[in-house]
Image (cartoon, rainbow, N blue to C red):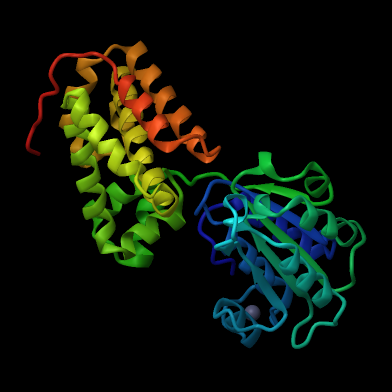
Length: 342
Ligand SMILES: [Zn+2]
């Protein structure tokens, strides 16, 4: 059986296409990070190589070898970390694509189909993408490509048009919560919180569940933000100057901190618009409610926009200290934030 949780529509489509023997030679799975694209891609690779009449069984030799990452016909390509220039820090290189194209022309070694899974295809250089076009256009016997992208807008149209596109959406939060409890043995209260914080991206929720330090880190960062939002401008600038320090090494940390901030303000917006039961930070409901009462709807919306702008500018390599200082200048005026011990 397909082990991916949820995504029923996508699973049905893939299952039927395998049953009918009319599956595509190239797929593009799109959806937010950690939503289940890689799990589904590996499931598809299993289904194509499974030895049983109800593929993927998950327990035959090929299925097991694929789930263990040992099957020689399943090749997973991911981002090459650490390029020399800023632009090449995270990319799929021409060399990686050349290696795939070389392998495409060799027959399957142990299975029925060779499956090439390329994660983060939006990070493929244009030159690398161009090299792939011909292969994507002209199916090679016994070869299936599965490209994965969390940012479809950045994938060249020439690549998209040569693939069958399948979109994966975040799962209902209750489904994530139940899966965390039943499959991963997470305590119910923690499962509820992680399901909310993951926004329905099961892979992310599982990562958080398995990393004990993450919740602690999140609590520290949230406390820092709440303090900074209350503080005077000098203190705010000192805080963001530290964030901006050695930004290129701390890029992901800064992104995570800003995500926490924007999610927090989105929760405030939910409270203000009467949907307080939908908030992500359910372990801090009282504080969210109190802060929501201190800002107007317009202020809240504007500040969410400001954080999103800052995140976009950082991706575009605008000077980080400048971006973060402007963000601090844009924290809306309000009464004193009342801190509550929860
Ligand atoms: Zn099997």
